[in-house]
Image (cartoon, rainbow, N blue to C red; front, side, top):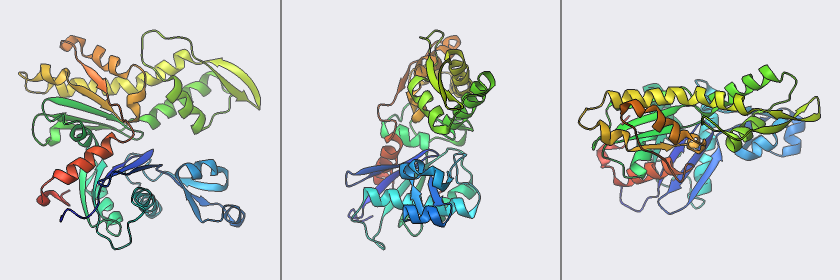
Length: 336
């Protein structure tokens, strides 16, 4: 790089895609796109498709696509095209002065165990958008953002996957990184199933479930009762969801705690104490009340631990990707 080209860090997430640029701007968008269902919806909206929140607000008139539903780009042409449009849109939001043909460097965060095929697909999608790419692990990008290069463990809980990355003063090896196919979407599904099992007549939507999770989601032995209002055939009623909510949250956090235990237990025994006392939780799941205490409690048999949650869950991964791209030697660019 000559130093004059703009550089961007991108957190390509299942639920949300965020960009931070070397010019100091940032932008974020929900990773979804909606195509007009018919001629009426196209006439009403005036567009072939809508992106992000705008698509969700008009979802009844659209065919919605979440192209990274499982944490990686879905294996079909429509998802590939949708991802390309979303990336182009969010970059244009962050760099409105950027013209087609201008050189642009980008570091893109992906799940730690994303396949070679998926990484190649990202390079293919972005070849007309950016000049050069650096594909990085999302959890490693978080560690880079926080300068946690010594013995530390990052737990990045996204919507589609949870990525764990064990740091030890150098680039992490394959055995230092774990991807769990559970995240916020998994919790949404479990909560939906549990609520409908107990209250079969209530009316639920993904937006309602996400709102409950974000406002009330918790992991603790005790908590204040959680009562929410649902519609049942249009009639409002109040429902107690305290136990259902906690049990659903535990289905997400239990495998995360086990993965943390495995990464600590398989680490060099002389450094395990440092590792378990330097755990960082990132991603949207870091907002789940009590997630830090739950992981600490799971480490009692190991001698305890110290867990903290990042302050900027939305942009931390993108900040790390940007920082890495500005400091990484040239020979690492386009390495998969």
